[in-house]
Length: 351
Image (cartoon, rainbow, N blue to C red):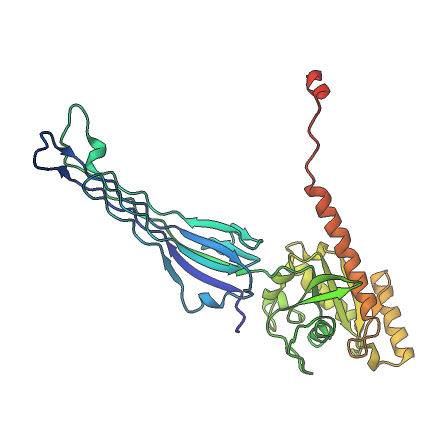
């Protein structure tokens, strides 16, 4: 399935049905009167978050969605039926933005979450609604109200606990394949990964979701290479795993290039916790490995890990380091979600 993480769609809710002008006319009924029913409400446009989706490809070939018009009112005080709703099914993590592609309308972060994007127009009143003591035979009815229409952007930001970042060919996809059941394309040329991949990694009997995005190069925030458009997929991550290619000539510069692009992108990515690991250490001799890890540690001012996805060396240690940050973030979020205790009677008496 082709990956698509952004789509522009046009939505329009249904118009309300028109009210009816009708009078009761029956044999042997001495007094008639108005009995025109009201029109039905137009259909809504609803966005629903569903499981089993990880792309917006459905909205590449269909961009217009319209709710049905409400049923018209009829005689004998019959109200028109409500127009059928239109439901847009989107993956978890989809954001709905206004036409300017900046104003956030809704953030769909949980499976089953629903959001009414455009409400259908109200149905018009039938002539029975206008009956009064001074106007017992009204011959007027209201048309239904028009629906709401708008262009909106759907933008998918994958939800993962940890995000893999680094230069092209830093070994990100190989690492993801080694620690999860994901099957990303792996080759020895730059930009093998053209779209994000998700995998579930496990360590010490516990699992977390790991996202791999296409590699960044210098100038990515200005559109160089694939650009930084896929960085949005790690905005929700609790921690970044930064892989630096150990076979490169200057590992410190490789780290700084990616870090510079992260800071240029902003959106809070630069403030996220980061675990740095030197990858492909199986291709280095002991002296070169030690030299490059020392240089990188000195530049960062903290220890770095060495990992080999091919041989499995230090893979579990890297996962544990990542999960330690995730666990701390989850505990902090759980603590913040606990409601404050209610004041007891003694506290109220103080007031």
